[in-house]
Length: 160
Ligand SMILES: Nc1ncnc2c1ncn2[C@@H]1O[C@H](COP(=O)(O)OP(=O)(O)OP(=O)(O)O)[C@@H](O)[C@H]1O
Image 1 (cartoon, helix red, strand yellow):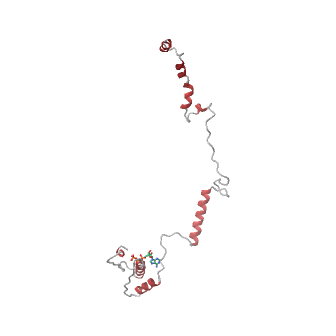
Image 2 (tube, protein in one colour):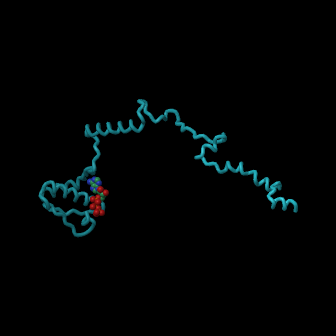
Image 3 (cartoon, rainbow, N blue to C red):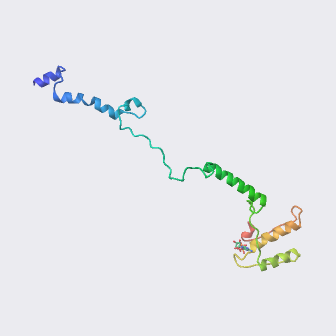
C-alpha cells in the first residue's frame, strides 16, 4: 500500500518505475539515421562502403590506355569507313536478288520475247516469285508510267 502511495506522490523508487526510465539512453541507438553523422561519432560499428574491386585485367582500359567504350567506337567507325570505302560490305535495305530456276528462267525469257504464256503449278512451286521477276523485267523494258498492268482474278496473287 505504501508503495502505491509513494508512486502516486511521484516518488519513483519503485523498481518498475526506475526500470522504465533507464532505456531512454539505450533506445536512442534505434532511432539513429544514417544522415545524422553526429550520432555515429562514437559508434565504431558503422559499416564503411567498400570500394569496388575489379578482377585483374578488367581495368576498363585497353592496352593503349584508352577507355574501352571509346576505343570500340573508334574501331567501329574505322571499320565502317573501311568497308564503305572498299564497297565490299555496305548495309543495304534491298533484299538479295532472286536466282530463278531453269524452268522459271525459261518462262521469263518467253514473256520477254512477247509470247503469251500460261503457267501453273502446285502451291509453293515459285509462281509468285516468277511473276514478280516478270513484272520487274517488264517495268525495266517499258519505263512509261502504267505501261505494265497486273491483273488477277483469284487466289493470293490478287494481293501480291
Ligand atoms: N527461284 C527461287 N529462288 C529462291 N526461292 C524461291 C524461288 N522460287 C520460289 N522460291 C521460294 O519458294 C517459296 C514458294 O514460292 P511462291 O510463293 O512463289 O510459290 P507459289 O507457287 O506462288 O505458291 P502459291 O501457289 O501457294 O501462292 C517462297 O518461299 C519463295 O521465296
